[in-house]
Length: 593
Image 1: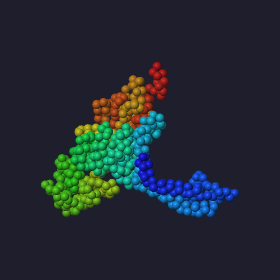
Image 2: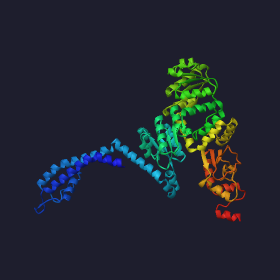
Image 3: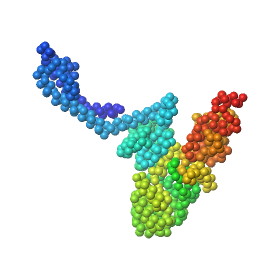
Image 4: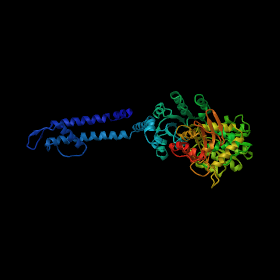
């Protein structure tokens, strides 16, 4: 606000001085010029009368001559004073209009409005939590995540956070992008600031130092900006979790040296590791893919990449990681790249782009089982995939997509031309960070899944299939994944059962307690955690206690039913005991006696 006042006074200083001087001099002249009253006596205007007349004169209101009709001398003086007063008023009004249309002034107004929204959210959430209705507490009273970078990955992250009931404060350097996001109804409640996210003042204005800031997400497209945000956060808020996107291996190592290594998200490395998992264990890859998919989307069929010769077009940041993953999986690889230094020393490597049939044939595309279109240009990747399929229609195609506006083209490639995998860095980053930030137990489960035997993955897949299948179409839809902490408000049912001496089990919680039929909820308990003790895929007979943490995957309706049962003192107890349980505590006390 001080910056706005300072800028306003600096821009309007000269017009205001001119207006005041002209008005003051004109008022003095009118007071000095003699006039006549109705009886012909000589009179002089007072300062109030002169000021009043000049105001209605300069503003063109024109209510007449005051306090008496003017003499010829007064009219001549007024005639001469009209021009400088009107010019001074027009000059001042024009300066005000120019100020409001000034880009710097607009930027300051936006920063001031943005700062007020963040201040209100961060400083009043405790007050709102205590004294305002529950509906408003959900909208305003929750902690927020600071999102640096509101591009394609930031958009997916913000939507994921909002769908999970979390607030987001966003910063992005692209002013036009911020304008487009403000026009999107989905982000109507998201405070947004246009400016470099690596700027310390912007981070402080966005609430980095506020108590209600629960985490920082550095998801810009520039590694240096993400590194700056991470370092700034670590210096100012050492207790705050930081999730950073990195494309260059050196940046990833740098970030991992001072933040949690799991919080450094390299989309190309993640894609390569998952591709390697698809070779070593397709069932583990499938379960992992199901749990990381966007809720509500249709799940893909099992992925079985073939073993044999693979042609990799483009050995940059993406291609080099895929090459390493394929070689670790025991595949034979041949590289096509336009840069001579990248193909030097590689057996069977071809110098070229891979968009031409000649280079693909030279690399042995006709004998290959798969092709990786991994250049930095989306159109080149589409051309590589189409040309390779023309030469060998049995290829397993892996394509890289960099720009979100080409998503429809890659979707057509995926459906019509049998592309099996499309690497979308923005989607990979968003899914990974959402899993880490909102469901931390999911990371633990996925790590166990990757290291476990296929029998464990088969058991997990069987349970998920039974919970996620649509009985009408026999299709599988991506689950919602959530963590339930049995404590506080979500432990009312457990405390009531403990008072009655009843031990609740997992199967009690997985039953639809609001129906009289024997109906299980459409969800799977993936993990049970009690202190440092963890049980993966617990059996229905697992006993539960207050303080336990449960990781679920399933329908959103199941999550609502579980929450309702945990917060009701009767629903779980009524199902877990053979007799009918009274609804009130007094009724239960009398029933016991």
